[in-house]
Image (cartoon, rainbow, N blue to C red; front, side):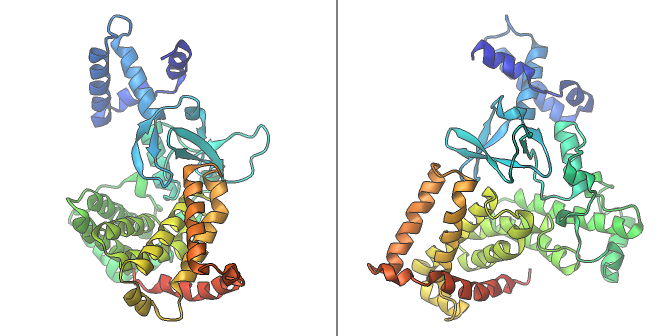
Length: 395
């Protein structure tokens, strides 16, 4: 490491004193990590243990998750320059990686001298959960434009006011609280100070707990069972829009695990629901990298089902009016039209999208380029039919 790189690393915010004061398992892990690095890196003569602790805290605070272009996590990395970017729950940029390359992709116009802001956390979570995560991990209270508006965004909306929670669910929550069967009040689940809001905070906490437990299950089938239990809670209580967390994240996790166990029709139906009802709300920019990747994954799944996974039977189940070939074309055209803004025209992902789109066009034309004439009109017609598939799954 050069002297300049070492100086840049030491200048990064570490929150050392705050982490030490908080204590707990996080500080114990930092102590073990720093001690191990200090002992086995042959630097004991030049670096003292407190410095090793400070560097360890700086790395944990500023590290970025290494992901593939489709956001599959691979590990962590530290880029001192990228770490200088501040947080906003309404960011104007997002971090995208392409092999060893890291870039900031703009989500909205950024004026000259305007600060580039990224998100440190999942900003699709409700306000209280975002604030608590930022306090716990980064030791600050967010005062961005989104947080200053209070809980008025879609992330904080319920289908009905908390006071209109069905009586049987209100009774259930009250009974669980009396029996001591729910966790103590967690500020991350805060909804409001009145009794009705406190009940919703309990239900929200139960939903997040169900998702966390499911993620820690022993295998994909056990994970699916746990996620479906959590989704039933969100659906049956009648309060959670499909885009409110953790309901939306449950659906995405269910989609992934259904792919893992080979239940492609159910995965497809859940992916369609995400495409039409969730992503446009949580990621309003059509070129948001997460939304583009979700659309790409749905396109590839549709292509696989149509060509290799009992495509005829699946076509019969969705109805003869819905042409899967046109759906595949429409999804890929959407990805192709947005990938330059989401990932960059020279990125490996953009090149992959271009190759696949060209392959599909060749397959559809069979040597007759005129076969694509009027395709936009056919896609528009089929999209109305395609939208109905988003309502197939009850929850």
